Length: 238
Image (cartoon, rainbow, N blue to C red; front, side, top):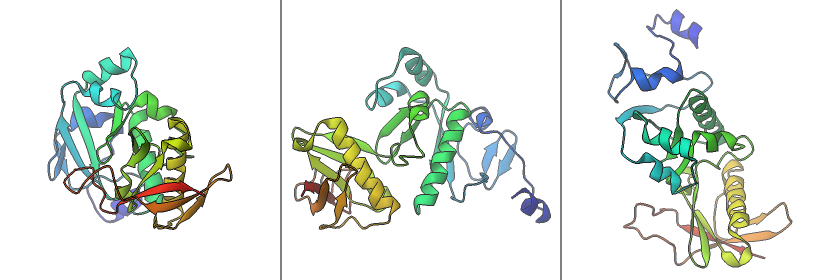
């Protein structure tokens, strides 16, 4: 990339991810970083085109993260003392782009980001929690959220991957087991590029077979922001 930029007589600079929060206070077009303005940001090894937005801090940010996973006191204090929010907006066009954006987020965490929030699903992870995730083995872990009702467990956020959301009856196991089941099926459908259609069958590592059936009573309606236009599929054990 560097050779291409040099030979193309394109003016550019290198920057460390850790400097963005102090040098880039707000989003703009072109993006102002320090005293310079840039039309694009290129991340080596990442082929995804991303829009960058930097927004001011918000009050009680830790409450959003605590709603998804408990925080220790040091994490809570750090999140509430944050100085800015750094947003990346783009499209995930397949498994390769998902791995690239996960790697990019890992770099941001290593560079000092306090946590990561997936706006499309409401999933939120502190830096410590994200670093503990086996993102290489479970690439969708970060992106999905789960909503549990009295009788059913639902995914939230699969529309971003061109898939319907999934749900399963609580009678099939405890919450942790069912979350793993929904995540496994979601990763299979996305990474293997299988359409999440009614009648699709998936076999788990435990040799259990589940069939996707259209859910006639989804959790959300068309007027809700969480509504998935591709619908919701229920996993039925066969």
